[in-house]
Every structure is written in structure tokens, then in C-alpha cells.
Length: 159
Image (cartoon, rainbow, N blue to C red; front, top):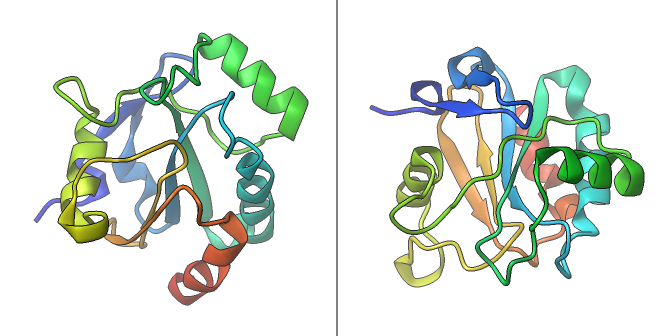
């Protein structure tokens, strides 16, 4: 059986991150964008991270430019935007595709584990969120309109 531990991703600094090192943590994996109507959710994601980081919770943000070209920047520009505008302290990953032929294998796997409405595997927009338990299994998928604070109860159950 596949878990998040079977994947390696790139950080926004270009380093490889073996996600097996995240086993034992509860993760919220999100595809993000800096110029989207949902971009203010960075505030809520940072609040969740601050609230639960000492209980082995982490947010992993994957910038994505597939939806309306709303993440045009390079890694440094994205990191600076997030730090200056939202004070982000959780990890930013390298920019990825979440749909299509060049989709990140991690996102392909998460979409197959927790399809969207009516069984759709495609991600419809920025700020789709996947909640991963301590064993590396995807337990829930949230749409872009689901505010981070509404996920707190589910996070608490897994902690």
C-alpha cells in the first residue's frame, strides 16, 4: 500500500525532501497561488500551523500556476511574497503541476486516494487541501472554499 512516505518532493530551495521523514506527523498538503482570490487563506494556514506545530502538525504548500496563471513567480519571488504578506513559517515546496501529464506524482496519488465531488480526480482550483494522518494516509480532501479554520477539528482528531 502506498503512503506519503513513498514520495520525494523538491523544496522551494531546490533540495529533495523525502516525505518518509514526515511519518508520525499530521500533514495538510495544499496547492497554493499568490494571485488568487483564495490567497488570503495563507493567514489561516499559518494560524493552523502555529496552533498545532508543537503537536507534530505541518503544512506543506505547493505553489501551482495551472489555474489562471495565478502563480507566475519563481521560487524566491513566491517565498518573499509569502513572508512579507503573510509571515509564513511553514515549508514552501517547489512549484508543481497538480493536473495533467506533468502532474506531481504526489498529487496524482492524493487525488486517487480522495477524489473530489462526484469522483472527479482533477483538482479544480488553487487551495485544494489534503489532510494526511500520522501513518501517511490521505484521510480527507477539502475544496478551495473550505477555510483553513474549518479543518481544525479534523486535525485535532488526528493529533
